[in-house]
Image 1 (cartoon, rainbow, N blue to C red):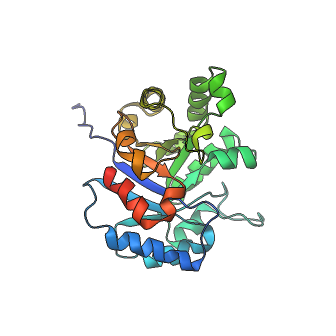
Image 2 (cartoon, one colour):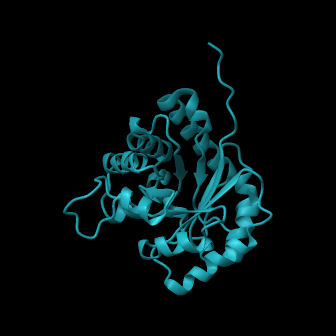
Length: 254
């Protein structure tokens, strides 16, 4: 049997608006769509607004190459889960992607690797591409446990249900989010290399084309050098994604 030719992982730049944005904020998404004319070939772009804006944003960006994603989903398709949103509901609202396991969900809502894995499985069940987040705290890094923690999260958060489906992994050093701090390029390369090895270990050759995103205070000033690091196949962008002009500069750096 001939071994299939493997291609480079598809780049993905995803903006996470977190709990920011009202209807008036859709103007920023439209501004981004208007500027989205000279981005690098092969770079996919997504915006993940609050759930209240998801359907409106999907409509506003209809016809553009910008995808829309959710920021979280429940593992179940439906049921008595007040306040939760299923992956199927996100899909129905126009989403293509969903973030699961973000550090703010893990820390603030006590989400374990098993919960994150169940949500990732739910995402592919609904036809969404999950962006599975992993990352260490400052205390864990200072204790010399960064690789141990992150690799454990990778192994525990990627269910076998992902086999044969599109998904991404986002490495977010928790201590760098919103602080302006970033690891060295060597630190980023080492962690992404370790993550790649674990993904290949779980999914064999298919693991070579899973995009690994970097997410930790990515902004126009540092995007190009971060995105040039081996095995960095895109970015999960926080605050800088709220302004179309800033976000498009990060996209162009990809």
